[in-house]
Length: 289
Image 1 (cartoon, rainbow, N blue to C red):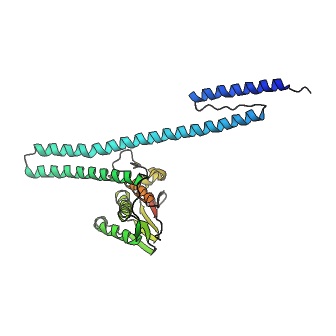
Image 2: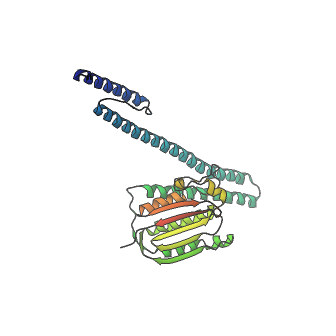
Image 3: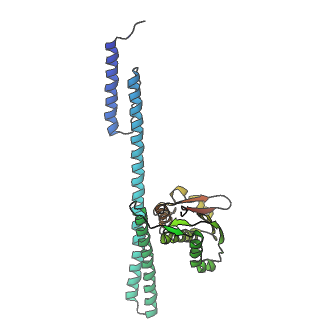
């Protein structure tokens, strides 16, 4: 059997390396290209496989950047919409009030403008809270808090709203332990979860506290359960509705999650479809020492 000479082997290896270099140059312009180089030289073949792995990782990072950019553009568009809508409404009511000759009608127009500006204040407050909570350098002052008491206070503050709707929340407060939390932050998280139930729920929520965990579960309409993406529910401005007419800012769950994380805890959400579709949120905090 005729064997390749060392010279021919080196020449084949050099040819494979040149081909690999050419593919790398082309991949710089078209990241989807791969080397897929078959070489008789084990070292060159291993190098080609390593290059392919590197290109795959680069492509995945590029795709993730593109997805992040797309989400950011969507969020900017949503923010622009949510800012313009109440401002335009307030401006319209103020113009009507200026033209009104009937004092009672003018007062109604001014009341309409005030409601739109109040919605604007809620949005700005949510944005500020989210930006602060999502800042890695922000460290809230954590103290021992009673999770059951915080839940009871939040429910009591909304008793009137539940009563008007004829909803009686199912409240189950089990054995609890003090948790590490910022009192205002904890109150805001629970408030946002209950407000989410009021805005998007189709019935009274069930609120459970056990140990260092709080769970809020509420029924939702089948159509809502079908269109909601649980993986995106805690994203900024996500409402699961292109029309964006649900009445919320799309920041409530994002704020709640950011605050939970800033306190060393976690907030997970889920949507269950089927005969009894429901939304659930689970807040877990660290026990106080």
